[in-house]
Image (cartoon, rainbow, N blue to C red; front, side):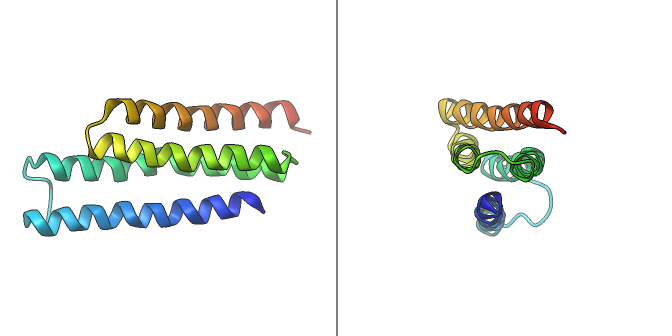
Length: 123
């Protein structure tokens, strides 16, 4: 299955985000909370934002693939989600609003298109 590949890649990216939080915590010597540290707040927010959107997007993509969505569309949607999440992370961590907007739009489009596909192809 195609979406399994994107799920695996996104899982690895999630681990990267987790390690980024750990790295900042160690560097700033903050074990709990964020102590008002802006760098840690951004790392935690990027991590949390991933968990807020990626699971539903992957579920929708999996269901669309399962219902017979053509492989090239699965690749387009899976790739858009992966690239969008990378842009989202850069946008949050580096305070780059343009990248964050690109990431948000890509993520929302994947969710909306996948939901629409499920609604029109349900049997």
